[in-house]
Amino acid sequence: QVQLVESGGALVQAGGSLRLSCSSSKSILSADAMAWYRQTPGDQRVLIASIANGGSTAYAESVKGRFTISRDIVRDTVDLQMDDLKTEDTAVYSCSWKYNYDEYWGRGTQVTVSS
Image (cartoon, rainbow, N blue to C red; front, top):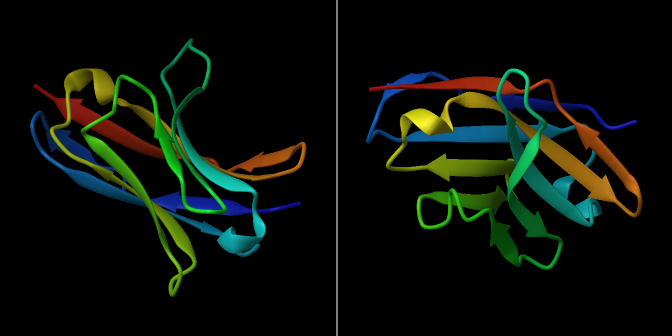
C-alpha cells in the first residue's frame, strides 16, 4: 500500500495560478509513473497529466499548454503548476503512484476557480 497526500488547493480567480504538490510514502522514483487526475461531482476521475519514470510527460488536451507536471527529486514530490486557470478547472485534484498493474491515489485537494 502506498499513501499519497496532495496539497496546494485553494480558491483562485480565473486567469490565476496555483501549484499543487503530491508526496508519497514510497519514493516517486520507485514508481513507473506518477500522475495527476481531477474529478468533479457526479463525474469519473479524469487523467490530466503524467510523468514517467524516465521523465517523459503527457497531458490531456484540456490542460495542455497551461499545466506543467514536474518532479522535485530533493523533496521527493510531484508537482502540478497550473496557469491561466479557468472556471472549468474547478475540481478535486488527486495524484497517483503507479507500478506495474498497481495504482494508488491520494484523497485529493480542492481547486476552485471563480469568474
